[in-house]
Length: 130
Image (cartoon, rainbow, N blue to C red; front, side):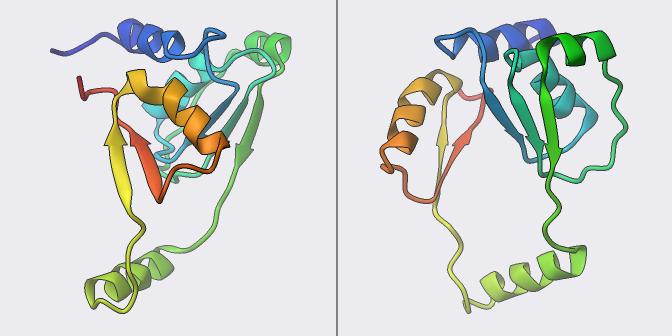
């Protein structure tokens, strides 16, 4: 079932007790993911963009200023370094980090686990899993 952007936004916001996340990590860095983060962030929230998809985004400055949303970018590594890491994993020289996929509805429980250092590897939120 394909959901509209507004429906997706409401699902994200409703997963949090305060109506939205305080901190958002965008590991994709695409226009669609950044715009969703920008719309979902609570006032005084922070968006950290790690992904380097390469899109251009537009922001409403009054919203940015009024809500005091912080935006940070992190760039750590080159494409060549990424290829080298993939080769090391493929050759068995290093073991990749374990991960588990989770439903969007599990976010509050995962935040508690994260706070208590109970998550091993990565917890990946996949909104399309029901």
